[in-house]
Image 1 (cartoon, rainbow, N blue to C red):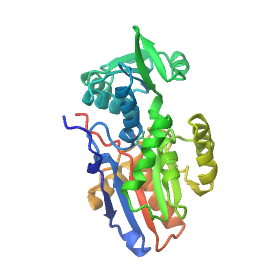
Image 2: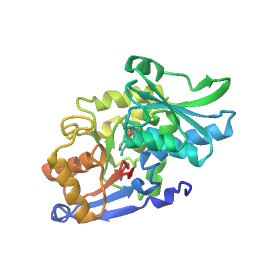
Image 3: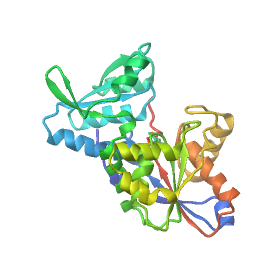
Image 4: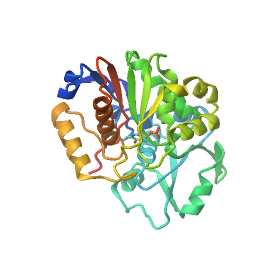
Length: 297
Ligand SMILES: *Cc1c(COP(=O)(O)O)cnc(C)c1O
């Protein structure tokens, strides 16, 4: 398998009639192309953690996630590439390695999967940076890669772009990526976030994570540049509608850019609505493609 190469991620301009009518230049940062399984923001969030693991006496990485976690898959694939052990605690003790293709792929990549009941999982995931298993130290990476090193990796995304956009838009889960991108933006740019969870208090969650990761000053300086668009969850996290499916298919047909149904499809739908509804004109916009389009068949 090839090593991970961030140069696979380029900035591409997208042509759509809505955009030309409103004289908007929309660019996409193709982080989905970084690697087939360590895709998008997941590599951004992991790579400083992997480097720390390699330079320390840790034997491997321990992480946490749900049955469909892109983060757990990325972690399994990255650890496999760098020859370090990986262990994941998966939420739900009714599950097993054969429950779905993502979990099977993780096991194939050498990850040890431990299935735990939800209340136990919720306690476990709040752990220290280092965990001792069988006498060896393991580096703990939280759910979704949401730690200080994860944010640090996401700060780096903007340096690979012109970083002179009026708006930068992206999907949001743990808010790790959005915080990193926000801290890197030119002062004239605004960040438009599309939470994938229904009823998600985006600004509160961003503040909370910035406090936990020691980025609170950066948050205070930049918080007023965040625009939250929380009406584009399509019924909730992981929910899919026919409307969303046809939007994603049409978008791919017109642009050749695949989107996923959990994050980027919803965020791109929301971004186009936002630009239209607010009659935004003559602006330069960047969408960060955070990945999620891996093929597991
Ligand atoms: C994990 C994920 C996100 C959410 O990123 P956060 O840093 O947790 O906010 C967005 N898009 C895709 C495709 C993802 O896999």
